[in-house]
Image (cartoon, rainbow, N blue to C red; front, side, top):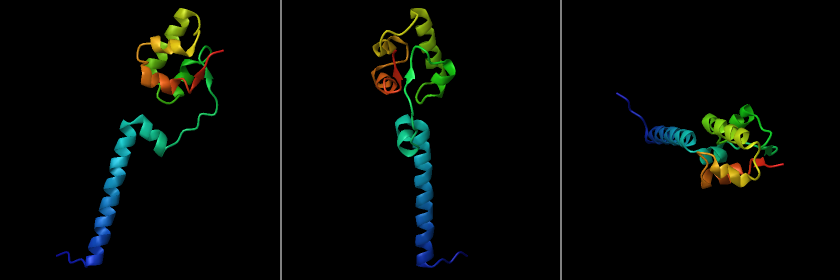
Length: 109
């Protein structure tokens, strides 16, 4: 019924392989935040002052989910201000790996 030449079969296999690679890459981007930075680079033009940043700005930064942003604001309000970036580690949800990412985004003034 479908009689393809050997060259047509090669082209079809190539296109199927390419489509499969695209699907795998798309799923990896959704799963892994670090991979997203490689595939879709995001430019952070300026660091944000952690003692003045708003909730909306926190949520808009990469790798800061809404719940974590809310906890950071609550911690800041409770303590009146962050004394150092190290205090971020005291916020629930900020471990060593996440702290390494966040310290590049923020500064204390």
